[in-house]
Amino acid sequence: MQIKRAYALPIGQDARVADDSSSSIPLPIVDVTGDLPAEREALLELLSDLAPKEWGAATECPAWTVAGVALHVLGDDLSLLARQRDAAMQGLVIFGESNPGLTFRQLLDGFNEQWVAAAQFLSPPLILTLLEATGRWTAEFYRDVDAEQLGEPVGLFAAQDASPYWQIAAREFLERWTHQQQIRRATARPKLRHEFLVPAGAVVAHIIAAHAGALDVEPGTTIVFAISGIQAWTIEVGPAESLVFLGAAASPTARLEVDADAATPMLSRGLTAPDLISKLRITGPDPLSAKLAQGFTLIAART
Image (cartoon, rainbow, N blue to C red; front, side):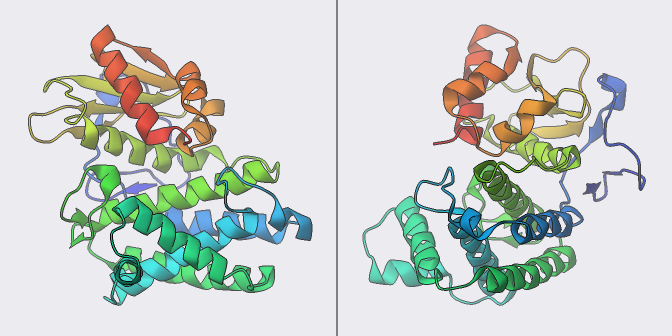
């Protein structure tokens, strides 16, 4: 993972940071442009290794098999390239014109279902070929676009009108990584390597920061989010905007911590709310802990 204008790990250096305030480094944005090609390469290796019957395996997405999840990722690639890179009319707008009266969630689900159903005729070799191409094109686009340029709003970061492209790319990385983990769980394949947890965790730390206000967390509160033995982040809640730092504050108001082995299923929506809460260690004042547990469940629990 690389952090533009803030902090970059030297090539080959372990991503772990000591758990003390002296290691806290400002993390104004998360740059996933170096992680997108690696995640797509891992997905292609995974799909290439599947037996024909495994493409039909059920996944945690109730309506979709492994092939359906792969097609959904492909559809997302095509949709973002069309609307973000090429400034074409959004697919949701087109879908909404023929399906009036739907909520945004219904529009999104309907649009995705329509694509996956229509693309069922694509063979695994074709899906792999197309995913390689669209993965390369999207990685190039996010690499070249100005990270601070405003684009479409990203609800994960509580945006209403527009989001900078680093948030748009970060959402895309987290979603791709989540869907790949769903395929891995459906086919009993090993989890991705821990280094993918660092950008995923950094994105989640920024999501926590973005929603602190909605949870009525008091300004001046410091929250540490930590993956044991891997990485920690500190969120400083402000009156208008919360800041994220790489590393753990020495005496935070509250601390959310998860073991490394549980972090991948937790951050990729592999756990139900009760399972997630049982694996998330929260320390801090009771009212704040309850708010953080509720918020983290909304962010990460499988629905």
